[in-house]
Length: 166
Image (cartoon, rainbow, N blue to C red; front, top):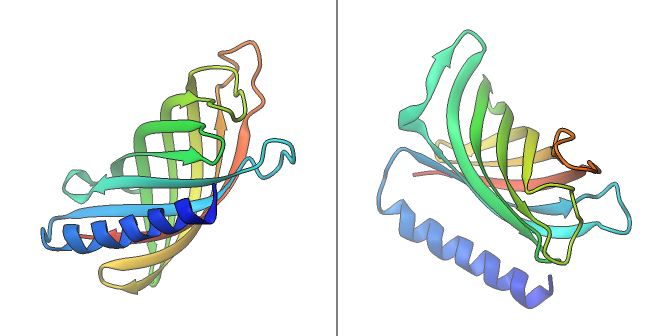
């Protein structure tokens, strides 16, 4: 992804943040960018993505606060992954630890062939609360088809996250 596309992404992020802030609804938006499949030098690629969490659907359980998520990302090689799943929010004061699991659909574009259209994303995120409505975080995920396809190379990625509650 070139610098111009990255600038357009961040301008859109800023514009959408301002636009959505007027709603004041109980939603969390996670805007992220990072390195898709950083552990494979031949397939490593820049990624940008977006995730939504509806806090009105969250539930407190014995393992923490669970809520549904929906999102997706695209890489500079036009690989696309869209998913829906759930995350746990473990409040640790100013820090929040968030593991998640989300099955989704993957299209390789000009990027890495992960072996199947159905892929599963396992992720961990650690975020720091900047204010009542925004946080910065880092996350790591692994995308794999759980051997549904003839091959299952998987992809490991890390991201930098900006989370905003509206």
